[in-house]
Length: 453
Image (cartoon, rainbow, N blue to C red; front, side):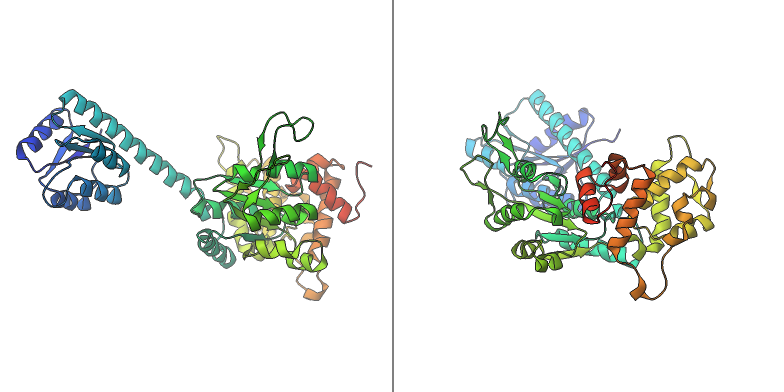
């Protein structure tokens, strides 16, 4: 086990040496400094596990040592020792970040207990920081897989936008990873320690949306037996992500606009305004500017939300990333104890030639189905599902004016999925990565036959 280093700072040689003798006897490695300046010089060169500093010293005193320690090594605990005990200095030292305050003369056993507990806290802080760094390495922009120029540009944009603390519209086709972008912005923002709350605007009726977002007071309606905080209130200090904001009913858009303008909300059945400090991230697969011009989305809400726009590229715009994404999903979904198969050149080429109307979400589903058919070490073309063998799904390379609109691709994709699951809406919604209400709305929008009718 690593020997714990403890820096002892005291201008009295006898007191300094006595402390060093006690700590060395207990198995610690003491470092000695006879004044504040010398202590800071040591701290600038190396990290210690604990600092024991006298409060009153010529030149830089113990409070200066405390401040500099916390600046250089935030996880290192500091215990202040003084022969001039007073409530004021004790409170000030603790306020500045000292772990504890000991008055001279002190009992050796008391000192030992404090040192042990301070070191435990310091070790815990460092372990937490290590875990955070490990989690961050698996989150942040590293979770956005790909090396294409568009994805590299997206990562740079996310890093910049995360620090601005303004409302953002994230625009992209269904299945491109808009929520992942939103979560990454939150994780990299100053609000990262607070909550990230996601809300699907197309998943609820208007009444449920009001209750879920704004909460309600006791007795506000039948069944409201207790006070309930809404998602907006629960996200205080953090980030609220509105998925498919274009599906939000116009009447709810008015209420959300008021929250953005006034930074307050009122629970259903309530009379008191509640102050709000939240950041709004909104995702859509629609052109909100055009929607606002056509009157299906409020213009004033659009401009409140659209401080910045991030466009997430479709998978067909970043085909060079498909092998990387495919290998990621092969690793993710290969059953435990089995080595993930690799893609053959021919299989990779086939995957890269497909249209992907469902984008990354569709690729993920395809890889899961591939693993059902492939038991060997290599994924070959014959392991690929039937839709990849359909030439109509291959990218059209003719005149762009002849290309069908995106809505037609979505419509055909929904029909294909519904046909595959024999009209089961729940199964289809799961494959599409949306809820039943959103699927029902799309069926209605495109005039598709309702499989349940």
